[in-house]
Image (cartoon, rainbow, N blue to C red; front, side, top):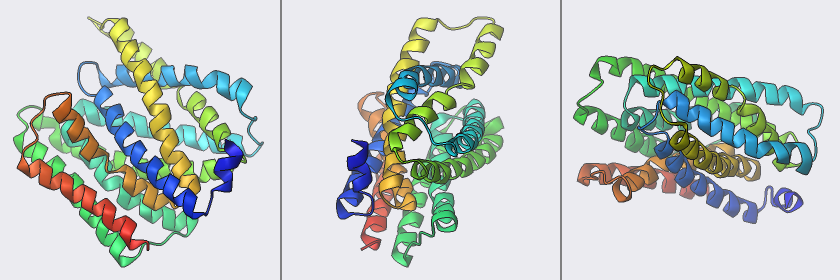
Length: 301
């Protein structure tokens, strides 16, 4: 399968597969976000998820995929540091502000920074029409954040701090997206990068979560927490793995923009499964997000 994927790089078929992978990543990322929403402390949830996908990745990394080339170990170290910083900021933001406000801000500023990073690192350029599409998509995503902020009733005293942290988290989203694209292109077998990335990336937060769990006066039952973590581990594999493969097959900036349609899927999940209300304003904002993604794709022709 690795040879087949590599053979598609730079081809029309590879471009179409990258499009499908990026949109799949958007849907799965919305599911991933919903798994972290509410019920459990975000630090504990993230720890359970990371433990699960590190445990799943270990046998593939050690016994299935080819071992990394020597230069990959330094690349893995960089990915480890960037993703750890991202997750620390994300958990901090969720502890300061509501998920429905923080999540759109993080995803909204990410594409802008990613497109700039893709230009600086890979020499990718966006046409004027594509930049317009990015602006439309960002307007829709950030509009969702503003809409949710206006109608929120709790946590207003920490709202400013949550917004600032969310913007920095969005920058780290762009940083890890471009860096991971560099990493997955630096090895002959893309699945070598994926397996070792998930193994290494899952080492820190289980330790932090365990420390927090032991310090709690009334810690939650481990059964439901680890069940959510186990499901989240599978979703993380599919979501992050899909967008990483998309960045190897096609342009990094476009894959990142398409992935950020995830708030549309998040709102649909909230409406269909969490029984959240989706009014006409939110529908209009979601339409803007989808329209922005379409414009970006049309603009590349």
